[in-house]
Image (cartoon, rainbow, N blue to C red; front, side):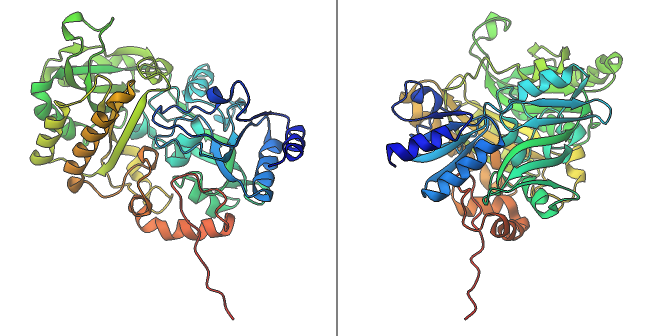
Length: 463
């Protein structure tokens, strides 16, 4: 890469080109997961679609590996790669709300908290996510789990169209009426098919909800997990809540006698009539009195960002995940055991329900295959100290390997790290071959491969 070539590329951009010798390079190259330490050849903080097209063209002409970064929150750090040209969308943050038809158009660099803040002003939301620091693009393209999945479905179930820049530089719209095959693949197939520079979502009502964490003692975890399973698989769809093992943070507002205590709990989100909330939660509280109950009326964006401060960017994360259809006495017993063995105060297990509205979409209607699962389970070893890496990885792997035989087989693609092609195939099931065919149509050279990659089908040459 000559200096003249680099200078010429820089002059063609409206955004900023960041190179390894630049003072801000080490800051800009960082992603959310501190376990990822990659050194790209160049990072382009794109200002507009023209910059994205220029990056694609430059990468192809100079045979550079290409990576796409939205929020940089991806578990495996797949928005960045060694020696790559990184298309960084973080400067592309436009949000346009159309109150008349209840939609919002969101550019690919937006974070969930930014979209939530905008849509909250009109009493609506895009159903997606748990953390406000999550990038909307990566979250959506992988499916989009969140606090309202049981009520409104996945993010992809509320996606109306996407503006995509393809490997050949064309800008196309994917929707139910245009490029339908691409639209199908984008809904769960990740960043395999192009750079999605904007999304059009259907807005859903959510303003002040009744939610927050409710915790029980660890000795009650097996009983509470069984109760939760029975409850959430039969609950009205406007009652959402994910089960978790966690360690109580050692600061206010958590009571001092619970600080650093390992517990189990549910983070609730009831999006119904507030005047009925206390009555709705009466049987929940009566089953077993919580040791901590922070559930009450709260603005929806406040719930979405509730845990952002506990998990700042730069912590080391190691993830393992599965889809799960059922919980039995044996699997619950294993969960209770590993929950009691969490290796660090930030390590956790979350079990997100994906039944309700999400299960009413056909398993072949989008690329997301596990519409018949009840849960997307993720086990995360987390710490700030690199010296604890082996400890958090070991616990996470042991936990997952013990519970995996009780799983449905695949996993939520946004929870996968670098786990190989077989794991990707298991995640997409009988949708995988269709994804391969669509990949071959839109990205036959596999330009977009820094992701949970779906390789294009190798076509036989007819002599």
